[in-house]
Length: 131
Image (cartoon, rainbow, N blue to C red; front, side):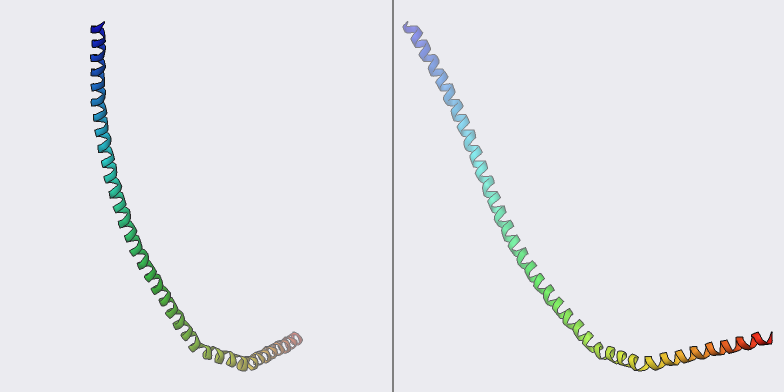
């Protein structure tokens, strides 16, 4: 029985040694995995920080561009208003001229039209009598 107990103890010791070696290899692989993951996380963190800084710079540039566009638009609007202000007196002058000149011309046109109709009727009356 002593031999059987010794054999079982040796077998158990061998299995324990194999399991210990497997655990050491597994823990070594797990340690390497954690190191790789930590390194990758550090790189990701660095990339995110760099991206954040670049986005801040881009947003600042966009803000400056937006301000410049707003200023340019304001200048263009002011220039258009000045041009329109220059043409307002001419428009008023044109309206005044139209309202002063148009009624007599329309009246003259009406007289000419009425005269033409009268002449046409007069001529048609005489041409019918002659036939």
